[in-house]
Length: 124
Image (cartoon, rainbow, N blue to C red; front, side, top):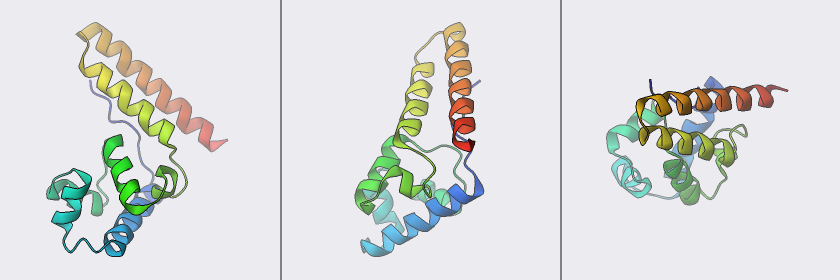
């Protein structure tokens, strides 16, 4: 069982897509391929993101998009996702890949609890 990280809301996906399009337009990359190369993803992955299909996204990619666009991680997702949340999820997911099966299940369960806690605490 592998964690998928956050479940992004429709509003977060829309904000992300709108912001990425705005960053690409503002910085005159010329092509989506050039922008994809700049942020360290394939053209296919960028197209998937721009079509709103964000299942997982590496924190390093989020940071690079924000760096290029001169905005915070929170702004990129419409004011809802903090850099701390994104980083914690990515680190726990990375750790789970390095462990034996029993330990991996423990980390994945911990990751699910952390995600649930952060999601619920944002609703309050």
